[in-house]
Image 1 (cartoon, rainbow, N blue to C red):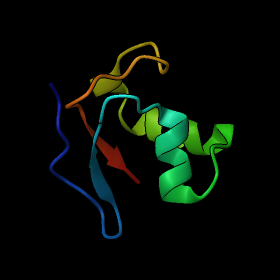
Image 2 (cartoon, rainbow, N blue to C red):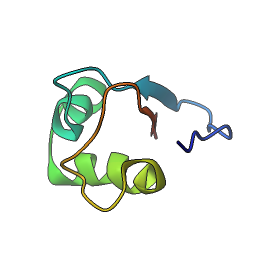
Image 3 (tube, rainbow, N blue to C red):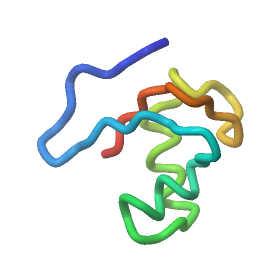
Length: 65
């Protein structure tokens, strides 16, 4: 598992829970599950998530820019 340790000011670290998706996380943090918000989270965490943005696992730590 890759965990970012160089968080920028205003950034967050989120631990994925059962039932989460990048869309629900984007809506929680940005107020919208738009594709640009989902992509922002995905591309910031691609090394952790892998090649399929539709598959995330409980316990993964995601950087929220």
